[in-house]
Length: 373
Image 1 (tube, rainbow, N blue to C red):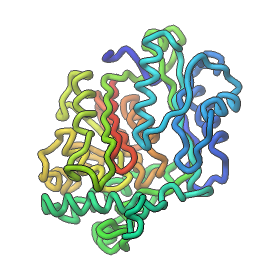
Image 2: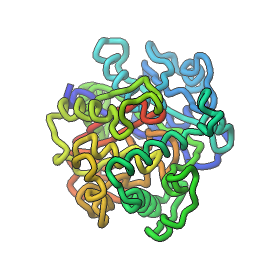
Image 3: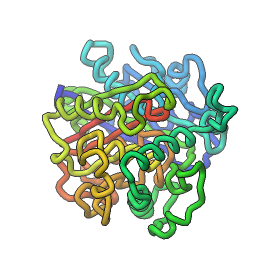
């Protein structure tokens, strides 16, 4: 499968407080992705869409198709939290491989900023009586466990926040364009201790989409800048945080290994990475589970600007969820594509291999994508 399929086009809406419904945002993102690919919507015969977190609807994929004015042969809506975007690219590849479709749109949109954020703030089962509220609470437990097991210093989490905010400040389309210092990070208020405000991603409206097809089809359609999918993988646990044997490792290890094996690459071959950063702990644990460093040594890997632009592994070069938009995951795929194309605002020189991670729930699901020219 290595290099057999490509991302042929990318497109997104503005990010922030938009006051638009999710079907409208999906349609706008899909139109932009088709325009980037240089193909007409009539060529699309597959549509795969992530269910909006803030408002689930029956037959949601069909509603997006209706808004676009298309009648694809295959598709629908799917949910894996923030891991779903890469998973849907994987599903699109499989559908094309089995003859179900030839040109697929993969899209996601949500509006928790102007609409409802209740899905993120809801109580968590019977344990809510003891304070188990919100997505942040689960990540705070995982953050705390990593600190307890490996004595991870606060500066390691701060390094992730600083890199994302620094890169986002250079992105003219980022929702939050304000760099911070380590002192700023240390002074930012608690959200759920030990999570500080600057450990937590943004809440954003927006939509983003990609066009997936075979490399052969892209050539026949005259697509200008297709980017090859070299490797893809996924992994998941069905257990919630309090039922897991360990809180300091995730199925990112399995997901990453599948993608690296398909691509025939190792972590040291990666030139730039877009690592899912809903919270700073997610980035640190993903780097460990992917094999960029040993468990408990990630604080050394991220120190002294090594994950900033110009460092040994630039991360989240458009700002990630911490700065560009809190939209779960598709923006990271876009930046991975731009880095391979050579069109990123903070363009890493000589990119051959670009890695993207997506992650969903409270580290329940994980997906990995490796892109190349």
